[in-house]
Length: 207
Image 1 (cartoon, rainbow, N blue to C red):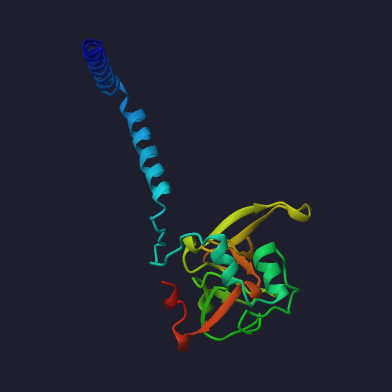
Image 2 (cartoon, rainbow, N blue to C red; image 1 turned 30 degrees about the vertical axis):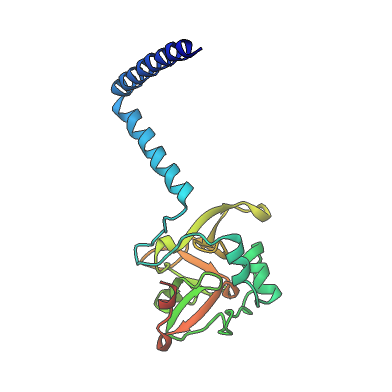
């Protein structure tokens, strides 16, 4: 009846009030460190849910990972070899590689090497050197955040694979036998790169 409904509503309000006090009390006694972790997790969850945050490199380029659909669209028009290198960790034969726009592996022109799929600048001609390996070699990337590194244990070897941070495309491997100032050799597949000569102000369109 009506009186019973009123009494039940009163009980619900009292219980809710007690739970609210309990929640406040628990929050008041949560250690600060745990509270910070929970807060950070909430922020991260919100960011992941909204999917609106863009990832920017220190040099000002958008390196937000491309979606599978975007990668597929960017790969249209590539040759079978270029597809194998970029998407299936393939390797071009030494001394035969060409960038996706036709520049040879031993190209000595000044300019910027951008990702074949992402378009972000990966290496410059100023960091390129002749390693004698038959693959384009660089001692450093344009920006460390433009590439990602991953352990590769294929073929019975332990190597460090280099990928395009934006598209995830396989670029090659990095070895600790390069020249100063880094001592590193980024041994790349030309088929995973596009060369933009200085005259074209390479890479700006990727910003």
